[in-house]
Image (tube, rainbow, N blue to C red; front, side, top):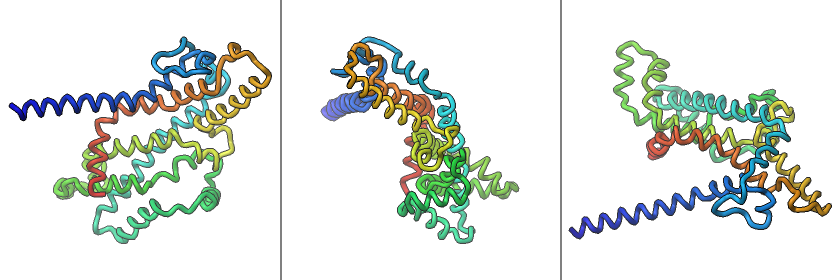
Length: 293
């Protein structure tokens, strides 16, 4: 009886604790959302905390009408899709090869990849390398350098090593080749870790703007994130000048703060839309792939 009461108390406390934790972690996103749809002039002095102050789409209208977002949006979207696919393909194929003990120089190759996790050559050597590979000012500079990622390689390789070797041996007895085994047996059994790596890679590709800043000057390949960063900076200067000219506060249709809120919502919205479909694989994949890694 006493144990049942103790267990019930623990469950209630656990639910309360997790509920509070959910509220604390989700509130920043709610705060950004309600301020992005509030009337900008009304949140100048005090931001909204519980409910929007008024309701307007002016921030989003300003962002979409004053800038050509369509091209940069598709550049960011395509690099997230293509880059994630290439990362999954490259990292998983190399990881599978490194699980085979008969592979020559297996340890040397593995440590060569792992070495890159701890040693970075810096910006200038990387820039020279991209130049020698003729990747500057091209779309491929976004996706080709990340085909093999050392961290993803460790996760995937560790996961592959936990798969029953008897499955591969049975397939080989039936006449299946290495690529057939990899494509029809190993990959279908590795959905959790592949989904986990896909989330990491897609988020990284979607949020990346530094490679655009350093390696690409052609506006044709500008990413959404760099465009929005430039937009925030330009709007900050414009509105500061307007304030210096004693523009009436009520006449200000948008503010840097309200624009930042709207832009933040636009940047994180795709991640929120994709994550729920892959979340069920995420915890299982990261646990199984990282336990022995």
